[in-house]
Amino acid sequence: MDGRSSKIKTSLHVSSGNRVKFWKDRWCKNLSLRDAFLSLFAITSSKDAWVVDVWDGGSWVPRFIKQFNDWELEDVVWEVA
Image (cartoon, rainbow, N blue to C red; front, side, top):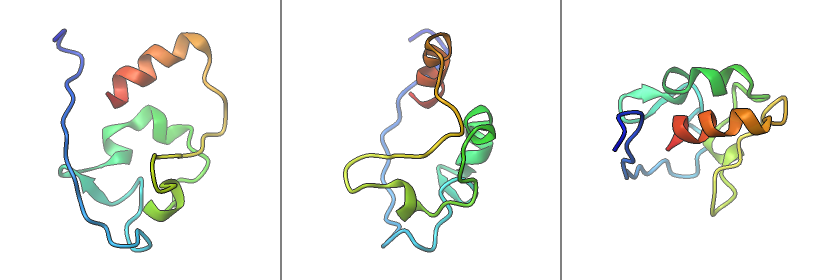
């Protein structure tokens, strides 16, 4: 491991997801995703999205206001890995 990131597997039951804010509620460890991933939160198009809004039943699909450039993808992958 290079010190930049480590993968942590966790699970949380959020029922239907219509009472938990994806970015703003503390459901990822003891942090909100907004606080854990500030650079991604800054470019999301739906800062008030509910969990149900960004879960398609098999993967996360948050929406952003811009496409990522090739040179940004490595940082995004490291940030969420």
